[in-house]
Length: 362
Length: 79
Image 1 (cartoon, rainbow over the protein chains, first blue to last red):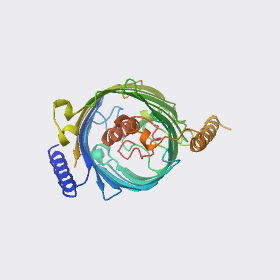
Image 2 (cartoon, chains in turn green, orange):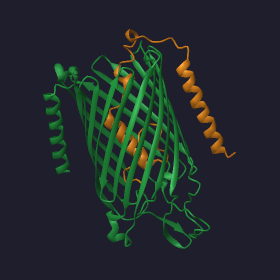
Image 3 (cartoon, one colour):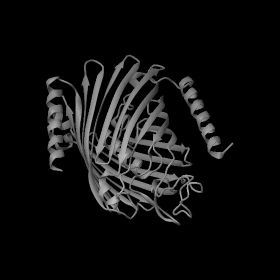
Image 4 (cartoon, each protein chain N blue to C red):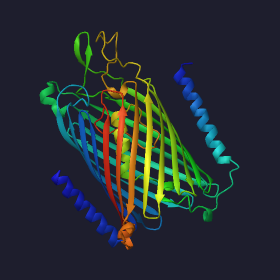
């Protein structure tokens, strides 16, 4: 972790100095996440910077490292233990002039056996005296996948590529001085290699590498509402997401977050998220035959099985002014969050700890 | 018509109806000077960019149901 930490600090310092030199407003967030489940542990330090440019522009950038240790390269099934790092960098620009907003963003993620590049464009327009916002986003990605992370142990080298196309439409409406509602519709098409190159499936003929369809069309609808209760200074955020794809998965994910202000220097939040999904049409725990004419597709992917998960979380956020600091340090914010995921699948339950320091740039 | 197609058609219809209703609704227009509560931190965005990105990545790696956020999921070696 030594080199990424040094790199992150160097980039953070550069962003801070550059923004300061340009007299730009913005913020720099340093965050670390620890994720632990039965067979997998992830440590993810990340750095996010956002600052204003010119009269109407805003630039954001991020850098992160995933340090992943798992009992299996196939993420959950019995197999070969592995440890690897994933590096991701991304950035975007958003410009808002009058009622119109438009922007572009890009992201590169790289690890020994998976490289992903994604770029997107977005635009929005504010209508009805800025009470209604309609947005559109388009994106395209290219992923390269291989079993290079454990090719020596796997024997046969495997590799493939996948392209992703995404379109999204969103709308939000201010309903009252304390209530905003929103809707989002996403559709994406994945085309190419979608198997895990390490994962094999139990069949009557023995272990066989999994076979997935070449294409997948995914659709998701999400509705949300944010309501501020003035008497208690409480914000209630409720959402429900419905997902359908042509592999046969249907999922429902309602979520509720409640943020309670404690004066102007601190807040606490609780979160509950429920997720239930059906299995992909071709998912079986084991297959009576590996013959492609009987079973063209085979998978041992837990993500394609039917399961239910419950997530509960608790977060505390405190500004520097709570400790008597003023100026930029008074507006600096610290956050600590703990979450527990209860899921009835082979991944098992998970715990997540998340801490951040967010510094304003002036 | 398969159940999934029927559900999809209903949801598309619902989305269209809600969007049109929202766009043309008779909601009283909220003026800029009435928006101090809408500008509160939790009303604008209660989660930071890194927090959102991590959770999207985590659910992308552990659930088969990405989407609904207007952002790409996956791209993470989580095939």
